[in-house]
Image (tube, rainbow, N blue to C red; front, side, top):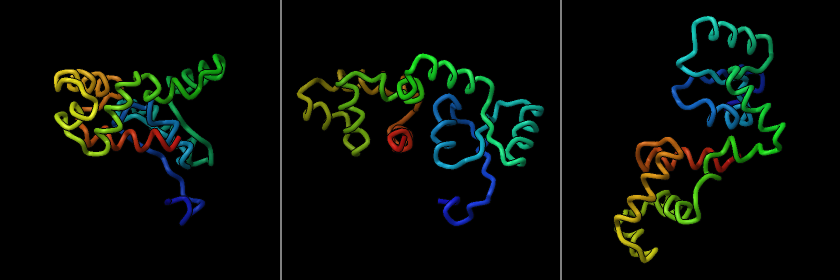
Length: 145
């Protein structure tokens, strides 16, 4: 959206979110780089230098993941944790992102509330989120790519 209004703007994302999940979607969306808030001062300077010279920047760890996924021809699965969900977890995730409560999901899926709670816990762990709001945001972002 920013890039459509100002095509020459330089965008370096500096985020506390997991770079192994979020870096690629932001780069694909037009960011010049992605840097974790845990990065060292030296890495921050290197990232700024790279993007200011019209280059791209991702950390060494993300570079290694990208190279391994290209080598293994497994690109989408590694960068998108949604692919690690079971069919039941996918269904629960979908219903959660629609705003359904645990009790409603249990009734829809004809399972116990405890079962839904177990699926929720697994989903939150696999997608590294803490609540349904964060889940919805992450799923929305990941489904774009």
